[in-house]
Length: 464
Image 1: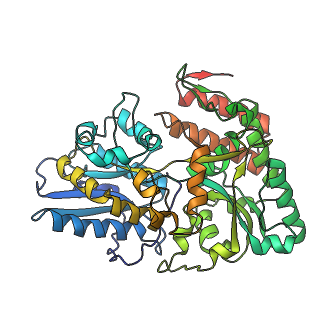
Image 2 (image 1 turned 120 degrees about the vertical axis):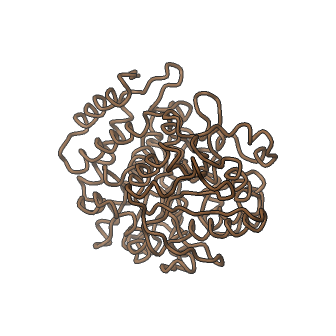
Image 3 (image 1 turned 180 degrees about the vertical axis):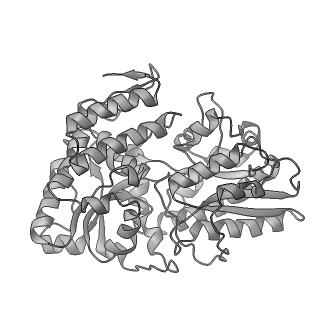
């Protein structure tokens, strides 16, 4: 999930912040030829928000546990502090050579197939077949790290779902109900229009959009709309990719309807200012200041938001669960199944050029005990992909909203994360940006998407 930030994990020792890796310095991180057989090197995405340390704290705690469990073995942490797109680039630079490849890397599941196709990752099936805990992972999570060759290339460490966050303070001023649950898109837009009219100075409806927002725009924004249109045929088919023909689907009516929704949000000034929406750091502003200050009426976003407000984060918001409400995103016309969610997630993978793959999998097993996995899900506001944790009352009651977002798994969708998907995602972002700025009509943006789709997929496109 290129779309989810990390936050502060309380009661775990802090990791000394390591500066971002410069491309020219990557050779210093090598695990391959000549590497120490007793040291496992682990690379992961470090948050660009200096107040958020949940991943740092967690892997530091796991490092201490691992080194205690395996005397004589050492863990070297190699964080990459960069925005999502730069993280992917730097990680792929590292994976190309045994001199720079770490032993274990944190992979966004939407890019994992690209790295598999490039030969960067090692299949984990020989390890997984001997690891009893693998039976606890739900099948949909396993499928997110399974390639077209049928092999598994990563161990997922949680998933996420998405919905509508709404501010009860704003709703009260606008005369909207505290138990708001829209039944269709029109009711979402109607609520936004009411907020615009009655509560000036507030962003009525935030929908992420455009290339600067990256996958956040594609997944939180566009796909939460597209997967609620009739193009999904009641939620049973994927509107982006046709598995039968193994071809990508050109923009149909549902695609245009999703673009029309985005166009309406920005044309009718129901969303943030366009300049704000196209600021790559806008999501940080939404999380850290706008939502806590009551400056956003409705926010189409993910299950992980509370991680930024935990005690010790530097941006504590103890009353968030009293001031924010949750509603599922409805389908376009309220048609079955009535609600929409998208899910993604991240996984731990072993590079094909890793020098110490066995030690790397031992580290995965340390992180993914039932107890440690539960710590991570709770700290990261993540949704459990382990059946045993999902049934644990300690998990389900750990934080307001966890049950709401866990229940959405039943109606969630996963992106068609095949090798071409990252390029398809950019094409979607460009179409969104066109209608957001007004530079393109819906028809023109959809046509541009079709052209970009052909280029991104070597013309492997079908129209339905």
